[in-house]
Image 1 (cartoon, rainbow over the protein chains, first blue to last red):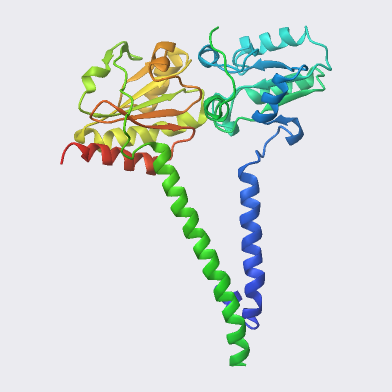
Image 2: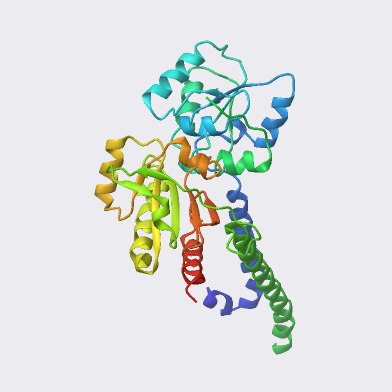
Length: 161
Length: 185
């Protein structure tokens, strides 16, 4: 690197090197807030947007696909408790609920049990609903957890089974 | 030629100085934010840690009152939660390193199969109590809505910090060391 900069015409390369570093930094910053995985970005919904939608007259069907213990403590008001979809019982319950919904129904699924990149439930739930033909399924993007990204930010919660 | 280089060096130096200044600002701000978030600064009214009793994964009774005067890390986790399971060796290392100085780690497992949890603890040679969670424990800590979550309790039995999401162990260790020394001096 230093040789590259010191070599013939090296000083002329400083702006290029700095521009490259700046571009790398900007790219890294952009990726920090954008999950890079198998759920397309246009299938994500941010907490603020969902909170607004829940206030409106056209509420989506909201399905919780995580551990029971968290649902009992706090969940998004109106969310249905499907349970952890990574387990067979949870997947069966998701399929059973999906069978009662029209394929064009707006559906939002969420989990928030673990940091986003490692959630064991949300990807299987999304994949299953897409496989079943749901065209308006979206996934609530919770980077850290329901606690950190929803409750602690002042969005409404309900508790109980 | 020398003049030509000098002209070019000055703007380059200026840009470099600006980058260094920006990075310094970022690190100072980030450090302050972390200190605030972790709650290790003196706070006017730190919440008291709950007094609980439960049985660990091997059926052995655990009472938090028995840890009075120690620094306690209460780690809510699950073997099915990949980032949580990945952190366990680091909690084992902390327990080993600071046990003699008064650190006690307690793992609270959320919705793990009891048999799988026992196998996990045996396989990883977990050197601290691991308790299958129930709602009572999470409620006692004011609710836990995501894993991993770790509470840092001081020798004064007060909750000094809470880490949500992937744990920054460098920060956590600093907090532990500070609390271990807090009432010893």
